[in-house]
Length: 234
Image (cartoon, rainbow, N blue to C red; front, side, top):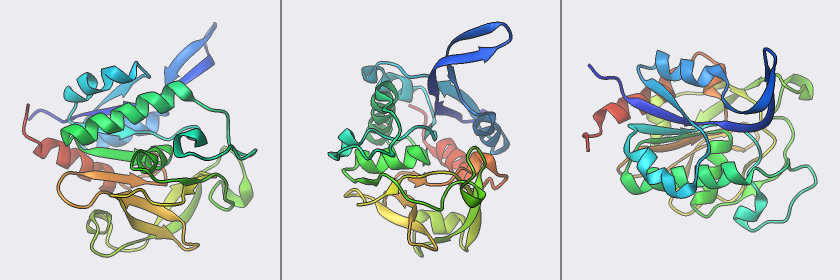
């Protein structure tokens, strides 16, 4: 049986060290490919490219994952820059927005993770809260995932995958503000933060605010892989 091919967007970093080298690199935390592999898929990494290449790339994939990463440029949703918002990543914003558009146009199953969920919401015309407290590491620690419970919204795709409250690995300081037309919230944190969004109806489009690749719960990724396997070839 051929395993579905799952494309995952990557970071573009100006300086990365390995061995004797210090060079520009495209990279991704290993948890993403591990999660795809353990969920029954084959992972392929998608470095930033020209946005007009996205339809051709997506046409060769069975599903797309837009990974976590830097803050989305607030200019994309018509907002001024909060001083706490990180530096822009224009190449990645443009590339991942094009991947999202190509996946939606072709009904390719699509999962957004953290930044990926935020960019998905922006692609649908939504906005973001540029800073909130309490969703990073324990006691605000940096570089350490926190954990908190999320509660599904009854009747949603996410609720069909994870029917009850579940603790998730989390690390973010931005979140969905106004939900984009065509999306609905499908999970919340205890403080009301939107923790998952999805597009109702046919197709498979889901975004989660947390980092499943930092944990061992396969339910969301396995559902994406299963959806990818169910899409007819061509």
